[in-house]
Length: 247
Image 1 (cartoon, rainbow, N blue to C red):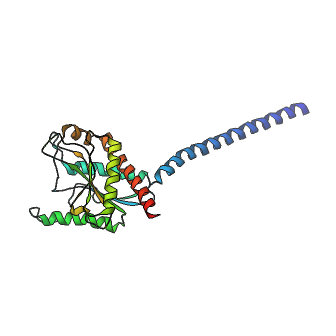
Image 2 (tube, rainbow, N blue to C red):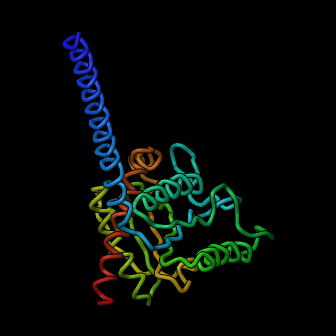
Image 3 (cartoon, rainbow, N blue to C red):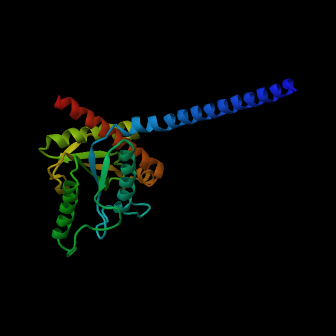
């Protein structure tokens, strides 16, 4: 009888030990999976942590911007698609992103026959960035030219703005590295009202709607994501350059 009871107790203890081991193994697996899921996101998300970036989808509303030669799509539509993708790429690296518009609208009222409404629209974009306490202002655009052979992304900065020049140069190289365009352009100075704010700013022409091959690429979601990742890479490089200069 004692032997029989002893066998039962021993068996129950063995089962309890096995169950305990199973629970402990399950907890260990959960911890490993949680660490695997969290650590890469934290590592990636921290690169632009603490930075606020204003992203401006060019044009909108009555102002369609350039029009694609083959598809007929307006620049204002594609700049919004690209800007929303850029927002995701920047936020994934820890940045706080402020968009000047999230829909097809003009940011001012008034007569479209005069330049006053357009000027007010551009000023409102700058004001949004200032009100948000942005560190950088990026205006997303698409290019157009009478010669359909012209292609490639190009970044502009306000003439006389050293901070914008550094930003544009770094973004230009990132776009070349990320998109491998047939024509590799260089960042250039210009006089653009939307770049006249107080912030380091750049106007990013993502490609030419007048180029048949590039038009198709610019409408492709995968290519838009490549643009967004290149812009995010450029912002990381810019942040690193600023840190070195400030030391």
